[in-house]
Image (cartoon, rainbow over all chains, first blue to last red; front, side):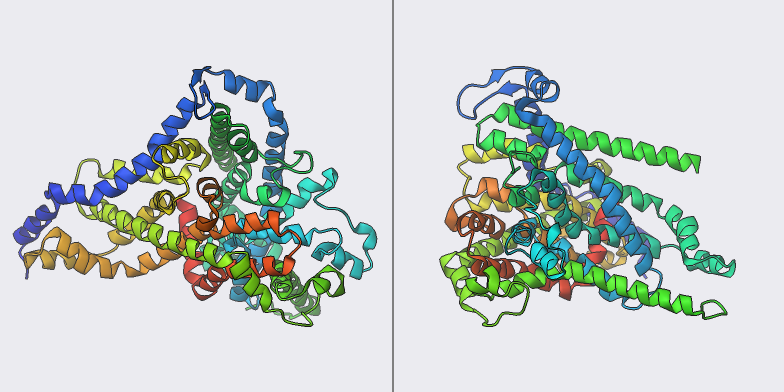
Length: 306
Length: 282
């Protein structure tokens, strides 16, 4: 009906309309460049200075970085340790739980959709709300946890969860698992669901148990998604702020639970250290980048071996 | 399906599994239920009388206190306003750029797409300070405008990614017949593409909303003025001040989370799908 020539001509009309191109592209491009790209370069720049935000900027080169990374400025090491512990717990506690849930839910149990939907609910709730809520859950006298333990006859297990430096960090981590286990479970579940049915059926015919099918077939086939989950879990833990800030008041007790982004916040808005604060920020960004690359490499070499 | 021998251990295993799943579900929901319950309780009940049970008296006045005295109503309105405008700005600009990438022929097409997609990997910390300085210089601290601008930019990468994928799946014949009839690029875009892309827009709106509604770090730093705060910042300020008024704080939290919860429960399928797609690319 439409001749080939006419089609080509109309396609050209779209393609060669330079003005239209600019109109369509420029708004997003300008917004993105001004609010995303340029600030990144500015951050790198600021991190090389000592600056209180108002007065003169004093160039110090790499001194901020040296102070921070090699001289434990502001007790940076504690925050770093905390974020790494969170990352470790995310990968070795949260992900296995998410994986088990994903495997179980994708194996045709009753209520699959219901459970999947319910487990994801905490993901859509604001970290601030979760922080305020768990502050109350952990309240030593009136909180959900200690009351629950008391009613179960386990009163001896009661603690001042967030007040005791021995339990504070783990207590701060629990809501994090609670919030995101559904997210990781969903990702893994989707990956498992993409495995062609023939694989599962073949395994069943060979007499494999559910467990064997899971270990030998499903898990190896969802390794790419596992990689995604590990990266998200680690990076999310390294840059965490909201939950820890609200739940622990940015690091109480005694800054024992402070995390790098919390440290950055303190440096910027309580000590007016805009140079050093940016340095801390840059460290976090670099840290995320390095871990991403390392994790990707690790998975790649693991895949090569298998 | 299933093995030839429907043995007892197997069905016990299934029941145990189901039970375990129910326990996990209870753990995932119960803190929220507890929150809803204590939002209706009076202080005597919360602080000793009735910590775990249903409220003996349902104190709707807690909600009144939260909305008016504790200003949750104001914060709620602020969040709605910021969400609304940032979502619109984000979708309009993203859609336009995506159309140009998916449909027009130009030299830097691929590079531009990758440029935006790189944004997915940038943590807020990398841009916080310069943006703060910029906002300070432009007098945009404690305005909603700066939040709207920043939030719309944060949403660009995922939106563009999803729009481009979606657009590439729409056959070109649609626009071609419009061009035959002499329509301009703009008309074609508005009258043909925009209606067709509605499903993708729906998903993006919801995902953006969830992100913006719950955002804390930037809102906390850029807008501290009480009358302009968004809900997360407002709740945190209550956390410090009304520390012992659990009832109204609970009411505030329930009000704050109702929109995201309801939207999630209604659109759960779409949201789950969108989250997975966004994750795979990021």
